[in-house]
Amino acid sequence: MTRTTRPVSLPPEATQHTHAGAQAFAKFYLKQYSAAAHAGDASLMRGLARPECQGCNALVHLVEALERKQQHTDLDALAIHSAWIVPESTSARAVISVLAEETPKRIIDANGAVVANVKGARFDIRLTERWGPDGWAVSDLRLMR
Image (cartoon, rainbow, N blue to C red; front, side):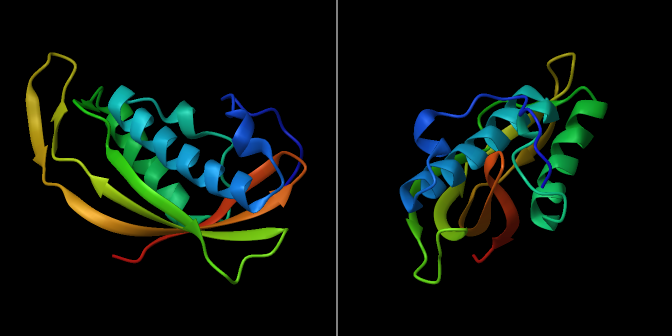
């Protein structure tokens, strides 16, 4: 990963080169996705994942689709319940399992009309992060359900 300036500010705990820092970064990443869907603004997720992260790219594309249609969710997309470090983690590569719940919500258009209803669901989201010049970045994201 080349050194870049991230367009969003990280909470201090998510900048630490520790397992606790990786765990805080994972929570922050998912909260940013949630905020991006709520705002209909994919820029809130930029610079937080490595280009090869297919799961991350899929989340960005979901938010970009909302943005193109001038839509957003009426609530934050996810509620995070807990997160823990998976034992296979190292100092350079952390694997974090996050229990999250997709909150039931509505997709709203620019005129305030409801265009879709989204049912809630619970997920075990597995994020792999790598430490680099900019700190932690998500390199893999999978739904374990």
